Length: 380
Image 1 (cartoon, rainbow, N blue to C red):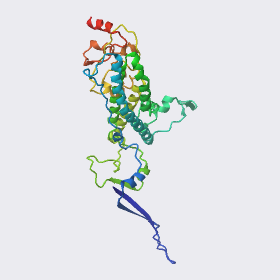
Image 2: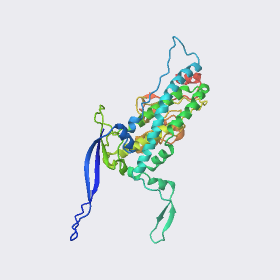
Image 3: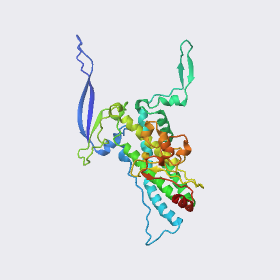
Image 4: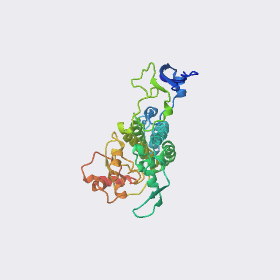
């Protein structure tokens, strides 16, 4: 690969004599030199920039296996047989998600280091106020005030930043714990299809987070040690259609110029949602006598545009479900199975969505209801 190196040395131009001295000091000589080095040598000196790395390319694709039905050779006659088919698909998908979520946690750690480098202000323990005509008063800061100055350079909302710090690194271990807890439990409470849908939700949420990290390159306070006297210009022969910033030090703009601060906020939000979804899966079998139907959109659309399913703990995902609603302060307008329970005084189109023209497809509806009762309610 090609490296541009700044060669510098000091030249002592001493022109003093025994009778006169017209010396103007030492000279600093600088010269740019083009060097060819091996990729192995470059790797030893290269340090990835947390604010302008290639996180997207380190995150693998995630996909969901489908349960295999073959009634000709092996029919499904019991719930145990159906559980086994779904569980095989879940276990196959979990092998993919274990790797993907571990990488997502690593990227989250990199993002956290990035906004710490971008001018995060120190969190003081006290502030001093002086109302007019009074002596100065020393007031201890609350956690909210202290957090509100964090991440100022990237304009990160304090609530978003605090949740990210609390959840960072939790995606992979939380999913592993949920898998070990819920898959066996589904053998007894007939919830394997709910858990399978949950795994699909996690996969979709991960893929949305992955896409949000593409071209996430910005910086305010770049570490000078990244390129003290050298710039990487790239590979001599690069067959990739897109030049890699790993072997070429790309131009790093201020986030105020390229709006990458907005992309950073979206990435942090989507990572938060991913972890919150995993940690708040909760299926509880209950005896219910009312058929509850929730309109939603197709599963081909973004996760945030769908209804919040019944297998998440009531009210836990309203703040995290959709980034655009979060920005517009409309987190109370999500359609969900528990909408009327969480906020009975909420907007009527959310509490009784079937009374309004918002139906695309039907989502969850009958947790713990007997088949006979459901058939009778649907026929009435």
